[in-house]
Figure 1 (cartoon, rainbow, N blue to C red):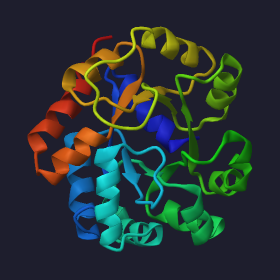
Figure 2 (figure 1 turned 180 degrees about the vertical axis):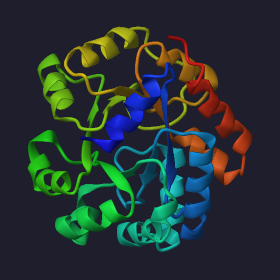
Figure 3 (figure 1 turned 135 degrees about the horizontal axis):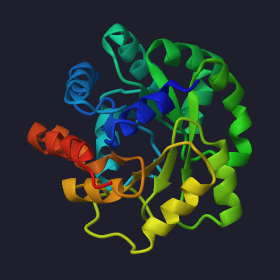
Figure 4 (figure 1 turned 45 degrees about the horizontal axis):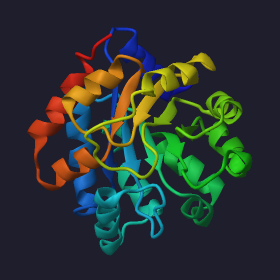
Length: 259
């Protein structure tokens, strides 16, 4: 059974919505990773998406791209992130989801990464530059380690591809809310509710909204028609500014989302 999916369902079964913050590992130094994760889980987040910096981040908007550049300048690598997480794995109480690219996993070694990531508390992996057709490169080994391979579903996916992606996704479905890269948005397309209902019709795996969500009101609004949200750029900015009040308000909004 998927520990990541279970964590989300345990929240939604109580009437709340899942909230997954995205953080960039190594932004400000890897020594910040432990206090940040422990603080976030103390606030009651459902899971934490841990971004791994990469030199060609095709899915990242300006805020996360700059955070990745800072992390790379600090010498952050996938292996160092896993080692750092492993150093306090016994204190981690929520599932971690690694957002990385395919090359770092291949350079690490799929078997070594899977085993060491599991020991470090990683229960899900998102690989935005790996097409569904190539998932078997890493999926069997991840699956053996009990790590979910989460798929992204875009607004432009055809119904046929949408169905294939949703049925293949493990843990949750990462439903992209905008056409383009990450980054805070002030508005979203009017037809998103129908889009999300279409995605959910293919599977019982939770559907979470991601990309562009940056305010408590947006968290609540998306909570009306999906299982929860992923917030990235706003979290990254808030951490840089040590603005925990904003983060607390975002997390709290998922507990009062419109149903």
